[in-house]
Length: 115
Length: 110
Image 1 (cartoon, rainbow over the protein chains, first blue to last red):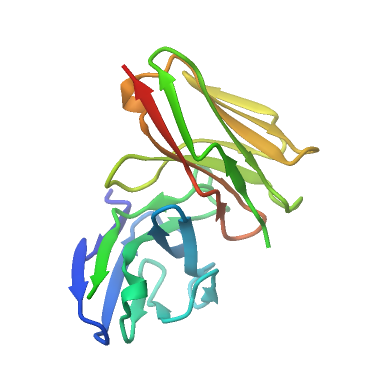
Image 2 (cartoon, rainbow over the protein chains, first blue to last red; image 1 turned 90 degrees about the vertical axis):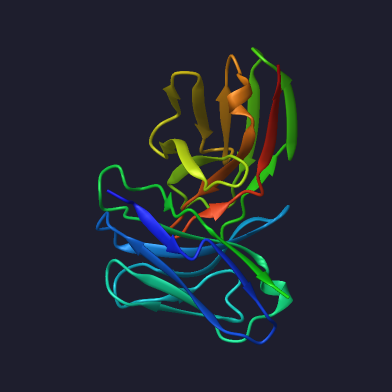
């Protein structure tokens, strides 16, 4: 049981390049989330998907797009990377309808540097 | 939306002492309050949680208390050990998503 798997773990991009961060969960959770973590600012929600087929903006959605490909997978795309997007990105999943799954399970994170 | 404030931002304690981290929230619809521990370079991990119909929950050396009237909840760690050193985040959930505090960096001095 892998939980939440994120790829890649590290990435360096040049300004203007694009990339997609992949996330997959094997816990049959309905809800999936993308957060960014910056020093002193905690975890800020970028986008989330409450259930398959739906996506919603979070606190800091500008410069990002998401796709809920199926129940397992939720990807985050940077169309034109900017230095301000240098951060650690975490994917998470949860399911309030499942016993023991109210809280988030996080992926291992992606450390992204935009130069 | 929900606003979660967390204090203190840094906390140093001697090994064996207790540590207390406090959070307040603004949205009375919040009904679930988890706490996460994040070690350096690792993912946040759920360590304890409490639902709004419960006032206190304990798990060995860790306890969480909730005061719904005052809209605050606290994490208590007793008999601290060096491996408790980490950043701790509180969170509140009024709907589908969680709102996080800005974190407390706890250092346990041997």
